[in-house]
Length: 516
Image (spheres, rainbow, N blue to C red):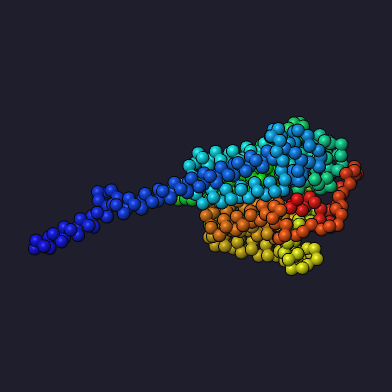
């Protein structure tokens, strides 16, 4: 009996040494907890170094671009006034192709390191890094695109010269100071009436003031989208810090979206607003099923409709949002809200442009007849030995997009996550269009960040990597080589009528070859 009691007590001591007692962790739990804390601290330190790399490369890139004219500031074709270079011009830096490649690769490496440890990174540090990277690229000249001067040109045409940007082209106002900076002087505005009318407010600021107003607008829209994405992710039970880092420190967003002052940041803001509103509606419905959560969903549909007023591509997510509702009546009510939002945009367009309010649809049709050198259809056509990018090849890609979109809509109607389905449809659109510009990748970022679908996130990162790769010298052996024939550029002379581009296919123009 004594032996059995001693043995029992000994077993109890041995078991108790490693078992929780009175709510306190045992030695094994303490060891595991200590190891977890060390791993989290290491991850946070690495993520902080990655964020520092993104911020530093952003600043050095903006400063180098401001130092002197380079191929990475296409607007230099209009001259190099101090207001174009920006406040960083006095740093006496320069941006060669090697420097651009190195800084871009450092930014990308830092971004990937941040994603690994973003969940353990302090919120204040992450927010500061995102803000600092945005500010750095706002201070530099417009990178890798002249589109911002297209916005200014269309705005000045309407506000100062009485020319409707949906029926007239920039070449009809060659005396305007913006004309020498515009990259597409014979194209009608492809932007929605809401954005086009709002851009008129930049005309009284002058060309320099208008440029910096649009750069600040792009940065603010981007920061707003990051905040909304973080809120939506948190509401849905995902890591808000990871989602904010995924979007806010993405090199495509920083270099192209903010650096190039693209209005795609406004499209991203509209999508992020819809995601935040619908996430809150879902949370409210789960907490109190009888509350009016449907109002937030309808507000999300209106946010996407507002995005259509900037670019038509924002409307791709609308049918997925409508089908996410259960029941025919709920879907009909949501569709009615979306149509009401679109009708409001149409009324604004009618007030501003009369019967030409939908002229941007025709301009989009013109664009879709063009071929960007590094679009997926163009690159794959080259790989299999086709001559150019024939129409039938482009139609195959269009058919593939239609099939993916239809399948994604069917899945959504059967209860799949509409955010993930809309994200896959967006990536399918980007991969199928022959008129692919790399900053279009911004459309997919909020959807991938919020949905929690790892495959969609990975696919989005791969597409972003491609959007960055086409600008780097290391991609030259891999991507379509520029032809040695002479470039033919449209003459910069006044014209009396617009130029029809519907049958015009561009493969070698330097404006479209984004690997400059």
